[in-house]
Length: 89
Image (cartoon, rainbow, N blue to C red; front, top):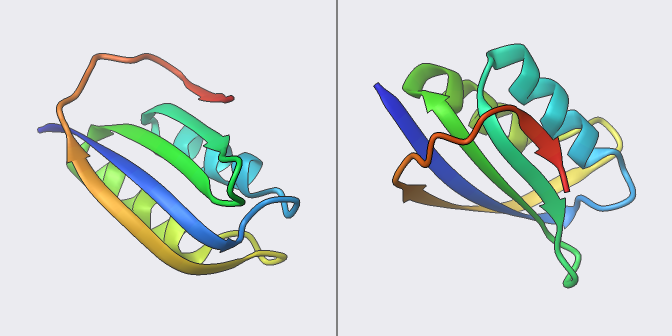
């Protein structure tokens, strides 16, 4: 079943390679979407794909890269849009 989730991640998530980390996790799991830095220091990601794959990406986002620190993750379920590929914005 195809699902979509939007994540807003706070902590030390900018300047530590978080977007590339998210891109690698998404590519590895074969999901679509995007990730971007927010002006307030958080990172936002939209992930769409098979439920199990999206859950595995969520686990990775909650851990983050070794040089980062994830303090909080807000998760919102969304309707899938059919987006293709995964981009860094």
